[in-house]
Image: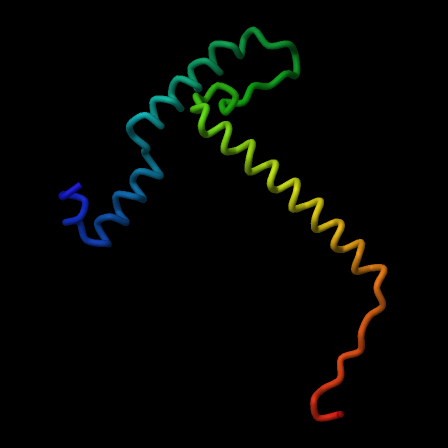
Length: 102
C-alpha cells in the first residue's frame, strides 16, 4: 500500500485508465473463462439462440445477495413512490401566495 500512497494523482489516473482498457488480475481471469465457455457452447446453440458472456461470469454469493437486497429495496421504493403519487392526485392543489400579497 505504501507504493500506492506515493503515486501522484496524475499517475494514479493513468493506471486507472489503463486498467479500464486492459484489466488484469481476477477480473480478467473471470472474463477470459466466461468468454471461453461462451465460445465453446456457441456451436451447440439452436438457430437464433444467443449466449451472453455475463451468464458465465463467476459471482460471489455475497455479491448476489447484496444485489437481491438492492433490487428488493428498489421495488419497495417504487411501490412507495406509486402510493405517494396516488395520494397526491386525490388532494386538491393548494394555491401558494407570495409573502408580499398578504
